[in-house]
Length: 426
Image 1 (cartoon, rainbow, N blue to C red):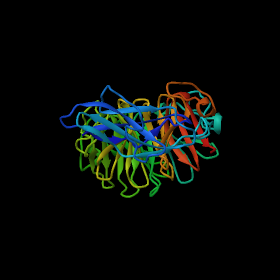
Image 2 (cartoon, rainbow, N blue to C red):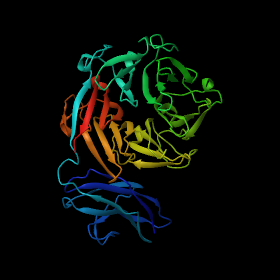
Image 3 (cartoon, one colour):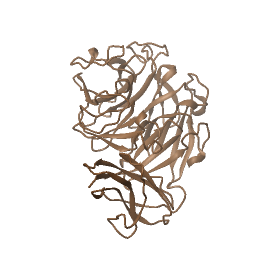
Image 4 (cartoon, rainbow, N blue to C red):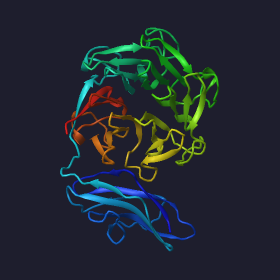
């Protein structure tokens, strides 16, 4: 009979509905005739004899909408596949429907920026940005932002004071002090809590840049031209359109989402550059060991508290999980279930291992690690605009970088040239 996996994430939970799904990993020589999800409030191992959805267009990965559910009830869910050899089931996932339309209340406000594209240091909405992208927070809650078309790194305090932390604003590449260094379309940024250093993917120059706490910038890795080269000498390695970046607290290794090469690259503290995972094969989503896994424009990166690396796999419409040995698994979404996370561009964890995701099509999502539920926190997929407000009343325009500090979520709202703040009140 078929071998089936149940999606580990439940999405779109309301008082009366939810979305689940699964994948058929093997079926032998038998023909699969139906796939779907079975669910129950009474049986902890539901079968097709209980409530279930039925899909007769057979695909390897699928999702199903569960409707007519009871508000505030706990459901047991698992995927199934029926073939001429019998019915196979995935593991059981438990979730509880909400009692209100929104799982939580998220209040969105404008933290900094007035919407005009420019380079103005000031406080709050007196400041200006020009397509802010990657973002990271230090231990004091200072936000560091890759201000892409200003070609600088900005700093925003928790009081909303905006300054230029590093960069002259000249489009190009130059190592130097806080005021003389030059960047070319910086994309993503990571903060190393052990050293206080920042690491930046300088997308236009295909370089990885280190910035010390005094704002001094030096080239950490890359030759300054697009390519794919691993090397024991970091300055001889080549990247192609590097985007997301993250620092491992356990090892000090730096991981880079090498989007143009569809690989995740690794830079050791000794300066050795290698491929952590990804075959480089394009337009594909394969879960496997490090040499055979595939990505499609990997973007944001973030570590959870256990040292697992998560990837916003943008064109696969998925969040991928990479264990410490380099094994890749799909955590949420795929190229079939495109609506779950849309086009994820950046991700961040909070101290409880809840995962926050920016979908560049206009929303911010939250995966609750305690309940395994994924829901829209603010904004709406496919809606571009600017509005402060609660939950879906808020609007973003190409939300990008994301950081969490003190219970608040900060978003680099790239298309609006603003930094937005999301406060969850329940």
